[in-house]
Picture 1 (cartoon, rainbow, N blue to C red):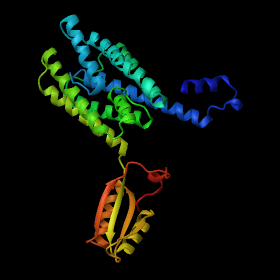
Picture 2: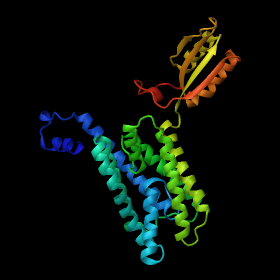
Picture 3: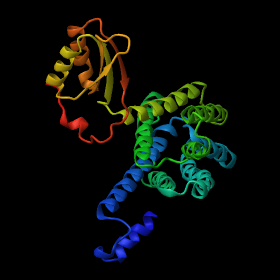
Picture 4: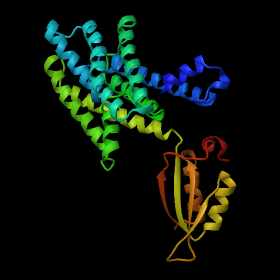
Length: 326
């Protein structure tokens, strides 16, 4: 456990520490700090953008929002901002506690502890924002709320996932299902469940919030979809690699151009039904793709080419930095 590792580093002399090396310790510290940032961003997206515009997020964040609105109406006859903000943080934490307990039992490990940490940080941030920044809310334009809130929550999910954590809710459910039913397409299940929660929550919001219209459903759905798209964008990066597979007779010319211009290695594969052709397999950065297409068109306009996004590269941590297009 990370807490025991930290305690060992504090209590034991450096030479007696067997639990982990310094590098591993500081890597863990960095990961937990980044997961905390993810929790803070999650809270900012909810507090500053989603709630003021009467939107409904997906997952347990959306459930906590809807339940808080219902309780506010039951208590005060209307939604009072101060009461709602306090309830939101409590409901968010309360809804996630049973799920986190289940995660502790069945998943254990680093993921669960980081998810608990992200949940605690998000809850505390929601409470802190309501106490020190009650007016730090953007409710003038739902479109602005959707755009910025969606991008921020996408960034939050990306940071948490990159450091083996999550923002709890449906992400934990997906992890649990994946452990026992790996054949299920979890991304689709999570997306559908989030959209269902958003639609139902938006309908409830229309009923209980004065002035809320059916447009809330569309804005909320856009927020959820944009959040997922933003997460994918951050996962790929802004200059993500692309794999080119080029079937050509002019493989010598194209290979030489690639080696000269991009300073990048490539792989030649045989073509079974045509000994005069070969397949060039090469990975380039997104910014280099246009120039590679121009090279192919110049050397062999009839070359059969297909391109795929590459989401990760192992054993070459300097891939993005070392090679630059001339």
